[in-house]
Length: 570
Image (cartoon, rainbow, N blue to C red; front, side):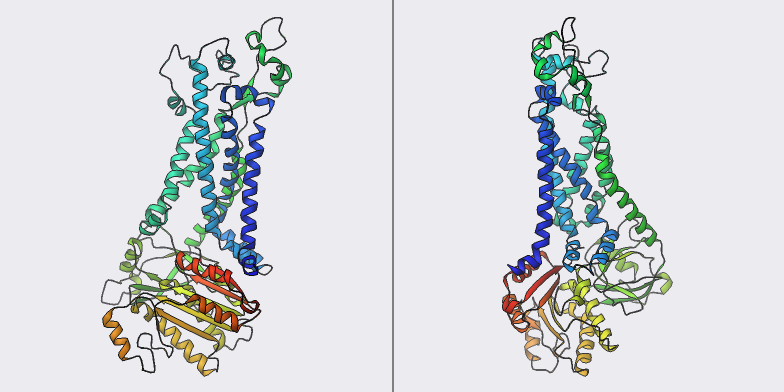
């Protein structure tokens, strides 16, 4: 229970508060439209009125939130501000994309309820016009304002005996509310469907471009309420025509000798803009900061082609300052003028440059690989290297590594990149004999499916291994490298050289392990060795591995140890 509270307590609290606000808004606005002001509107629409307006309030609230988790500069500022006070609170900011998705799902849900309710509303509006009976209150209400159109209740104004082909679909496309509703619904459908993981990973450009339909979505959202299609009785009219007294006198409304004049109606003023204007201004400022950064000159100082189609770029930019485990967004104009892609920094803060390692897996990375001369045998001249634009750096969970006395670093494949920065920084700190390093023990796990991928990172590990041995700190860093797939020919080679002093794959004294770790045993061993400690568990890898490690963190509490799970989420 202690581990669950440490790992998930604040997250659960935040989600419960968010759900509670949604529930409160839904119930509050549902009840608001059961009041006397909306009595005559309910005569036409019934319960569908409240079912349309309640989710609209929740949509305003969630559309206010949806942009905030993707304001990267704002999050980095908040993370740096609160990290010194509460590491737990700072960790919640690392789950920004998860919260962004939850808010998006809530928007989709309330949009569906809102649309279905309004489809019923349009049918009731149309039915009231079609059923032409002066003894029917819905029909009488629909005829109010027919002449001058000054104060009406039914937005379908066409006399069906004159223009019988008018239908809800036509009305939907000829009103502000209907037209903007269709536009923002289509934009939302495209945004959500293109965000599915299979599309995002296989066709990132589709995801990236369609996500920018949010601009159309927010413009349509702001103007959606200007049509004032849902109307209620005005405050002045309520004083003269109280539904409780006049609803049964509707056939004599406005006649001489009656105390019930015709009711007057008006729509609510648009409110959505009040909810979203703040986040929209923040997001515009965010984009301006990004644009300013993207215009700063970036110089590529070195290009290294590693095995397993991994490209290393070493760069410099004036005033660039970073922390371990941070990431940047990169743009290469000669590949694409619009696309920006995130990459973890593999350099250490102590170095005079910053670097990224990029695995070539898609059209954009292939284009960058070719622009840097990766497909050529000769050395690329410096002046021929492509121009780069950099936005960042931005904070991640890995920034907290040195805040724990005991640390577990788990990388899968190219997911080892943030820990390259961490281990390099460790190496520099011990070379410089920095006594302020709080971390006393690092357990490093790297799971990789192919032997070639080890090669670019092995040099760093060899340097660390030698440095720790020289300083008598062999117990400071324990590393376990796992090869998860191999060929039969490779297996024979491994068996022949298994007794060699250095590992045949990495060249390290620590031998490569085959298969996957027994995480239950690993957590039990670490927990037993470090009683009453908080162990920071940091992962950069697939969701399946994250689920496994998170469960282990929650289930292990040997000797009072607490495992705190952190995952890269950019």
